[in-house]
Image (tube, rainbow over all chains, first blue to last red; front, side):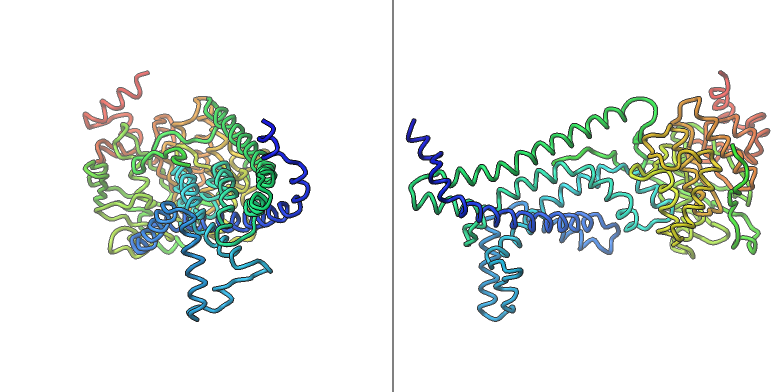
Length: 269
Length: 264
């Protein structure tokens, strides 16, 4: 029993390596925030492209669907290797300029930016699906009302549909952000010294896991509050929906119009 | 309901054209194998109020949705102010139609993330490029006109069905439509809220707005309609003045329907 306690909870080792672990966690946070913001934007763009109407833009829709299928379907680790390998090789062969092949934007290392790119490519695909569920959950009557007052498809999406859709999918998006935060640890394999790598370095040097446990505590300090926020948002939304379901005032969702399929819930969020 | 603040009955542009506001010629629409409209013909003159009645599934709502091109018809022609708006020969596109034709829906379809005022302003600003102040002023006047002056900042989920529907009417009127389409706008309302909506529509009719009203409110049709059109199974079975169609129907089908609707 003592060994278990010493291996995981050696406070001396935690104290000695606190700064190194904290530095690693700071890098984790930066990876997470930048990739998170980019994924949220990229995912929304993909979702909107996927909803473009008309035959002329069918190729754009197909490409978007293909992209989402591919990046949802392959491991992030594989994407990391392919992105970092390609960019560094292309740069070495002078196919692309060094500023892109070996990026050091804002003082961060190339592995950091390879990580941001890979995380965004992958999580953008996940989030596109979440947004899509939200867009499809907005009653069809909203689009019809927007179009009937003369809005174009783009205006209806921008002012009417997307604002409602985003509100509906904030909880699942936050869940994806929690998953994204944990997956930033994968960027260590291409050389980013984030918190898991920092803890692992301690373990290798000291034959002790306390540094990793300290890293775990850092993660939990962010993810557990976020999970509670998600719960709170969901329960608030449920309370609202139940109130709206009663008689009297409430947003009319009612009968499906003869043309459209009935709106489904947030499938697969 | 406060008077003043005139509801625009579609000003400008139309004086030069004196034919029917709207002409439907052999309009057909199907969804898959289901033929919803099987050749509908009728005209609507400027300032007329045409009430369309008939059993569920007779194609009444689809007809309205064809007119504002939410469901473009597959065959036949629709002319708006003399200009063809459907099919390959269309001389005017969807913008021409949607800026002249306002629509009010059974389920209100107010934008739930916007206040009543914003609901009435948004399309004015984004579609007609009106300045914010101008759009607000217009919205305020229209909301006052429909008796919602004290609710301009409320969100739809705080409004009763009747109030939501009146805001929806104001939202459509804000675009200065030449024709208004009403798609069973009182069918989703509690009985005590029906009158407040019908009163607004009645005033609108008295102001000379051209209207097509799909409705089950026979009293409204009798009092307000210039003409009543009875539809069944995708066709116009009978049309005429309210006295003719409602008071002395010629067709068996019309008599049967009215017997079922009026006998209680």
